[in-house]
Amino acid sequence: MPQNSQDDMVNEHNGKNSRKLDQSLDFHAQALKAEAQGDWQAAAGYYFQYVSQRSAELALINSVQEGLSSNLEMQAIYNLIGDKLRDTFDAQIVMISQYDPITHKIFHHYAIERGQHLHIPGWHPIDSSRGEVVRNRRPFIINGQEILDVLEAKKMHVVPGTEVPKTWLGVPMLVGNEARGIVSLQNLDKENAFTTSDISLLMTLTNSMSMSLENARLFNETQRLLNLLEQEMEIARYTQQSMLRNKLPKYAGYDLGSLIIPARAVGGDFYDFIPLDKQRLCIVIGDVSDKGLPAALFMALTFSLVRAETRGAENSLQVLQNVNRNLINMNASSMFVTLLYCVLDSRTGILRYSRAGHLPPIVLDGAGKCIDIKVQEGQPLGLFKKVKIDQQQVTIPHNGLALLYSDGLNEAIDSHGTEFGYNRIKQELFVNRKKSAGDICNKLWQVVQSHSGEMPHQDDFTTVIVKRD
Image (cartoon, rainbow, N blue to C red; front, side):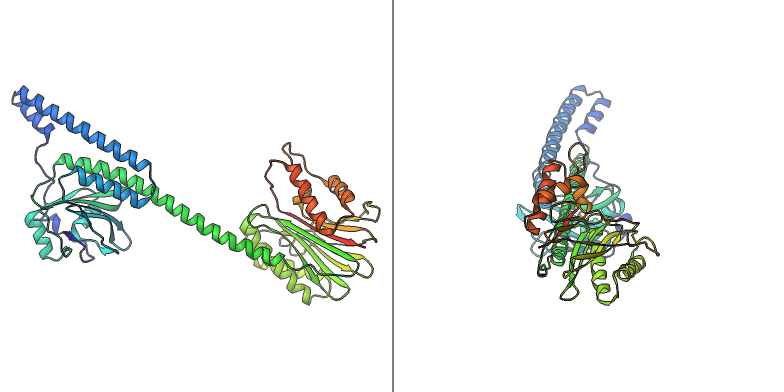
């Protein structure tokens, strides 16, 4: 059985060794000839045989298409069509070969000779006959001596243990206008074994297979990319959680709690606790403008910059200015981040904070009353070279608390588009103020979920609670 050759695609078949497709008359042609000769009885017989033949062919095509539509697994498609071809045509050898136009190599997905399946592993240089099919994108057939000539020229070689055919027919597997493979039929016993009707039917079946294989390939590739994306997102999610899962620091007289729920696998919200000394604690909360993986990457960059600048800067204003400068220099996507950078003095309860476009904290006194906080203009980081920062301070009273949060809390909407809102936050803080800081964070998330109902959460949810004894 000829297969594989050196890498070059020869034009030898275009000259004296090439021939037209089989010209033996099919039933339709014979009917027309009989009709022209006035032999109406013979013509009717030939027409009957032609109609029967066409009915059988259409039934075969339908059965193949039904089988193809029910299975998207690629090898199953190769096996299905190969078995159908083996049973339909006068061919002892059937091969279905994928073609790679970049390497000019073929891979035999299906090969059978005299009922025995052949395993031909690996990619091989395309042989001259298959090269002819690929180059011209139409059927090609050679017989007897032509096959021997090609073998002698070493443009093909015989797989050890297989036979040399008397007829070789190949048709292209076309996707659009590009040949992606070759289906070949080989008859071991006689020349001119395939009629023009055979070739037409083979092309029809091959076209059906080509479409199904392309759909299966696209499906498999989509699944592969989705699996790869899921793996990468899982890594990103774990990495982000490990960044935010730092152990809460302990300061005498204070209870700290935090909770972050990303709207997607990863998000753009973050928080951080950075101990400055035994009495002072830096608390940071931020919200990146985008969502998903881009926001998570920008969040990780901001998170790292804040930590690095906190160690070296003299005050919170300088920290945010330095972070802003670095973000502008590194930011090619025009994303930005709102930030609330707080320094808590545990001795006095004073919370000094610098606000870069973020929501101000909510502070309750010991009786649960909300303390008024001054607000001035504060701009997000990553947009303006000279960023405006709102700097304020507030004292957390004894038995009071402070809430730092992102807009995934107050802007959560229900099915009517009604936001959870600032007043509802104050109400829940008042009702739950005697619970632990962690329990208050969890309770806020529970009531937000209840408020949203069936509505999917559109934004990351982040809360940080600081309770003072």
